[in-house]
Amino acid sequence: MRELDRTAVENFAIAEELLMENAGLAACSVIETELGIQGKRFVLICGTGNNGGDGLVTARKILSMRGTASVYILGDKQKFKGPSKTNLEIITRLPVVLKQLNEGSMESLKIEMAHCDAVVDALFGTGLSRNVEGAYLDTIQMINRSGKKVFSIDIPSGVNGDTGRVMGEAVKADYTITYGVPKIGNILYPGYDRCGKLFVSHISFPPSHYGKESLKIETSTPARLTARDKNGHKGDFGDALFISGSSSYYGAPYFCAYSFLKAGGGYSRLAAPRSIIPSIAERGARSYLPPRRKQPPGASR
Image (cartoon, rainbow, N blue to C red):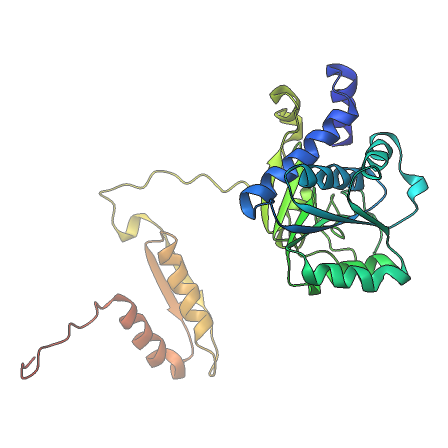
């Protein structure tokens, strides 16, 4: 993703400010579609990197769409750079609640969350490489306990973008808006489970940029099955013997033998202890016999 950003700037002259503006616009588009913005109150929690910058743009867009935005910044404001710093300067001049998040303002954040309609998570991006702790951990836990709809920008804060691993604790989002292409952390568990409904916005990248073969990741390729002979019989599709089971456990041998047939096998044989054969045979018979029809009152079978 860093390479996509770099080549967008260098090869296509797409300014970083424009990419960040489009990221915030994409986030607001999802918020508007899924929840609505006008007349609603939002709490935005921003870090000091580009993810936080995307959050600042989102706050400005919410304001322009007649919503109310309260922005809490976690981290040293001096670390804002480039377009993120520009958007911080813009937001300080707008009628937006802007607070530094620390031990003294945690209670204020808790109150704001209790009265808002949704939380926007712009704390960490995809570059997180160590477990969250301290005020970051407290903030993520507060988001998860809030009971509010949560929109995460790019990836839920606390999820490793390269692996999907939860770094100690992670935001449980209802919606995630990711940019350019889905990150590995968006599509592999347990990160996938934290994303909620995933939206992808290309933020003005041309198709040749995000559709490259080199970006594609193959996670699983099912074996290609040969065509099945419609005139075949059970002897044409394999004959398997399962030796399985014990005196107290008959589920495993039954499912092993039955799964061979369900997968297309022709003839399934099962060797099991004598004591469990009647139970397995009865269960197998129930699997193949059609259900009995209910008879009307007074009718005989």
